[in-house]
Image (cartoon, rainbow, N blue to C red):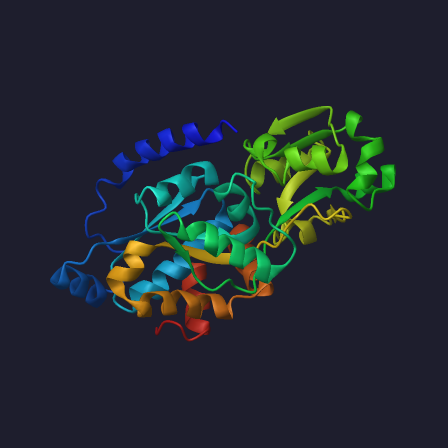
Amino acid sequence: MNRHPRALACAAGLAFALAGTGCAAAPGQSQAASAAAAVVDRPVIVVGSFDFPESIVLAYLYADALAARGYPVRVLPGLGPRELVDPALMAGLIQLVPEYTGSALEFITLGRVPATASVTATAQALATAMAGRGLITGRPAAAQDGNAIVVTAATAARYRLHTISGLAAVAGRLVFGGPPECPERAYCLQGLRLTYGLRFRQFVPLDADGPLTRQALAARDISVALLFTTDPAIRTAHLVVLADDRGLQPAENVVPVLRRAAADRYGPALLATLDAVSVRLSTAALATLDAEVELDSLDPQAAAGQWLRAEGLVTP
């Protein structure tokens, strides 16, 4: 695969964006927490996220839970795709990233260690793979968000589509839309070709589970799309999720991935704080947070803060 040299080059460039992190606190961090951080002069825990709304919400969930307990935290939301963010984490440019177990395992091992639908096996394999790179994983949340191959109700009816394998007979006439990195991803076009034999007439690079993909699907500029399983548009737009009848998609539990150096510096209470968030986060809760941000236009940090307060993880 040739994606990693490019990713490492981008990660080097990210250092310039991080140069000003200093001892800045997360937006909304209490003055008391900021003052405590300044007095002790502890290094800031920089939390990065991928470039889609749910990842940004997750970054604030973990970051604000830490900030509420006095840890010096800064969030860098929407940094880019995994090819940029994870190498930056491995290089120590950021210290914490909310990840998804199956996709993270495929990326970190270059596909040599296959992720499966087993939540436990995939999480354990990821923890082992991360350990050799100076990283540790927290407790996986019950919340999962994987890839969903979707079509409109009209397309499903026209071609009598219920499963992904059902696309084989018509893929050559259809246009597929998804994130720009989709052709290189094992669980996107690459996996659809190898597992299902699908070759679409055209691929249109759009965004990662964002408005461009949904708009293109609604306008019939594309016929098939990659969305995430928690996307509220699946329900509101009455989209049809095609069944993954050959088991391409793995377990995709939300999991915080942390630099071991940061965990060692701050002690076990740091990881315990992250795990307290994960243990309360369900798929239903994550879908609700997504809807608040993407449908109700609630600020991601505000949505995260409401949930943390409701769960008793931070005090008003």
